[in-house]
Image (tube, rainbow, N blue to C red; front, side, top):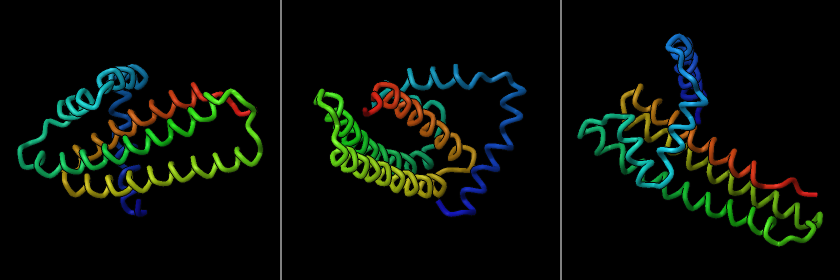
Length: 159
């Protein structure tokens, strides 16, 4: 993400934080509801559609960006899960050489995810008005944070 866009996004988040706090928003409860709503790709799409209330013109620009990102994200998540499963399911000790190779593979997957996210951010900001763009980015970030938390919670520390 380029610096001006990052500064703008952080500014938006900081600008809306006091309003959210004043409304008594419970971020943990909000996240739990969002994750429950996004259990399947179809349900996630419906939750995003409901949260954004897109006009026909906005939808025509947004959904291709959304779909392309979800395909990349799904492929990345499958690759990440396979790497983790290989370690967990093997049931054998992890050698130093294998651990280094695993670290490189995991870094490659995370790098690919970041590149896809950066491209999606740029496209969403062009496709939607500012508030709807940041709302979608927040939704996507929260869902991905929950996914990464779940993976981290189930992946035991390598010994």
